[in-house]
Each structure stands twice: as structure tokens, then as C-alpha cells.
Amino acid sequence: MASSTGCKAWTREKTDQDNSLHLPEFQATQLQATRNNYSYPAMALTGTISDLVQQEFDSTSKMDLHLKELLHSNDDSKTALGYASVLFWGHVSGKDKRLRMARALGKVSLALNGRDRVVKGQPQRMRGVQDMGLNTVAGHIRQAMHSIQADDYASALNTLNRLPQLQIAFSSKICAFLAPEKCGVIDSVIAEKFPHFGFEVAKGFVKSNSANLSRYKDYCLFLQNTAQALNATQEHSKWKDRDGTEHAWRAVDVERAMYG
Image (cartoon, rainbow, N blue to C red; front, side, top):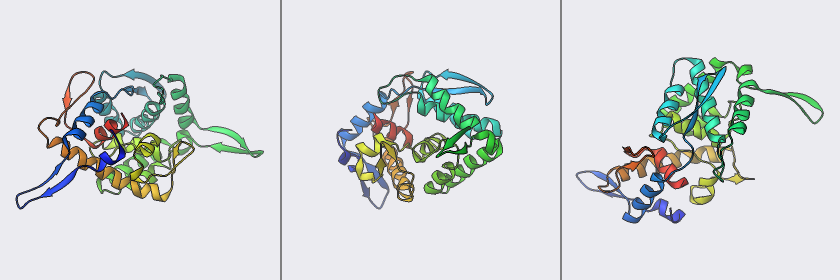
């Protein structure tokens, strides 16, 4: 996108017949182009929580479906695998686009197994999934889903922040895979490129404070409204995935277009 002001360019036109959202042609064109060229690796984990297997997908849509099915599973171990898989996906590549599978797996191992450490001379336990229990981890993820369904996005983030290795940025990644039609990721890239959303960043990370938690709802509603506006266009109602398939817009697709 050309500038942060472009994000606010869609307007609402209300008539007696309907309510419709409209995007300027240039903005719709830019969003479609950047979503088509979204290049973040489509990688996730399969297997089991005790025997992780890396998998690369030929489209983001197939990866999204895989992760959504895991996170929505009634099986606690599969739900936890979905959580671990989102952590892996989020750490596997950086801004330089270099793959770092070993680093990503290390982050997952830390989240699952925890670690004993010494802080200011005192022994301390960094808790992992094995300390919390699979049922507790899965319960937090399901509670976050209920909050999203109720449009309580701040509570969803706050619940997920209780999980190992999660703060607001990675909690929003879980939200985006739980409900891609309603949520997107808020990380330092988006926060810094589009400062009018008001997210506070410190040392390259989105702060996990109450102000940012509350701002996430407005951000998600913006993504939803923009997706609705794009779906209502004639020329830009579909974006093309890397396997050549075309799809309607969701909130997460708008965020990925903005990220690009």
C-alpha cells in the first residue's frame, strides 16, 4: 500500500436500498496485487505433539485450513499441535525472508517443554505446555474462539497471552488462524507501516498493554470492512493464491496484503 492514509480511503454510502462499502480503484488494485504476491512461507507442523513433522503447503489457503482444523479440534492434543504450529509458522522466517527452521523448532520446543533458568541468581521455571497441561492450553484457545465469536477481541488476546511464548503479536496470529474471516495479525511491521491504528511498539515489539488490546477490535473491524468492500467490487473481488486458485477476501487476506 502506498501510504497509511490509503487504509482509511474506503467510504460508506448509505441509501434506502442498501448499505455498501466502496474502495478507490487505486487502493483495490494495490491490495489485490500485494495479496497475490504475498510470499511468507506456507509452512506448518503436522504429526503429533510428541512427534512433530514439518510440512510445506503449495498455497496459503491449504495451510490456513490445516491450522484452522487443528485449532478447532475437540482433541486437546490436536489443538495444542495447532498452537505449536502457529508458533513454528511465525518464527520460520524473518523480515529478510530467510528460512530458519531450526530456530522455529527451538521456539516450539521451549513453548512445549518449558525451561529451568536462573534469574538474578534465583532459580526460576519458564513454564511450557507440559507444565500447564494440554487441557488447559486447549481450553484457553477455545475460550479465545468464543470471545472472537462475541466480537470481544481484547478478551481473546488476553486469554491467549496466558499461553507460553505468547504476547499480543503471536496471540493475534492464533486469532487469525482461528477466525481468518474476522481477524488479522498485528505485529511491528503493520504497526509501524500504519501508525494511525495507534498500536504502541517498543524495541521492535507490539506492547502487550491494555491500550493495544482494546485497539485490536477496531483493527479487526477495519480488516473485515475492507474485505467486504473488495468482495463487492467487480474487478478485485478475488485474489490469486500461489497455486493459481482464486478466493474471496477475508480479514486475514487484507492484513496480508497490507503486510506485503
